[in-house]
Image (tube, rainbow, N blue to C red):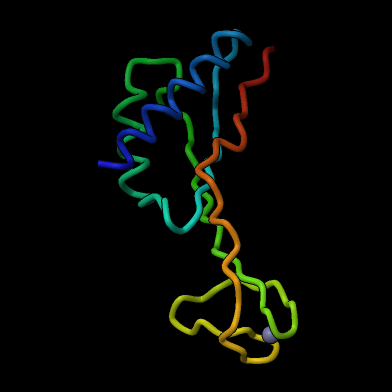
Length: 115
Ligand SMILES: [Zn+2]
């Protein structure tokens, strides 16, 4: 399953940072595009399973879905593409270029403050 592999990679990266900083991670944010979208439930479950017994156990994982964007060739508006109604919201043109999909990214890791 896609989420299991992603969760393991994310966990490994967080553990490396935690090791370097000698701090306990409390929260992380992962963002993804539409073509590599993550199922939030599956991702959280996979992460919790992978994190069990590590310093990451019990930390909060947040997933940010980045919408697909397109730029209109007629009026050059940059807009969020709705796949149900693929039209430029400004001029209703169907002539647009789809921007590159957002990559899967570990955006942020928050560590516990050392007392
Ligand atoms: Zn337009």
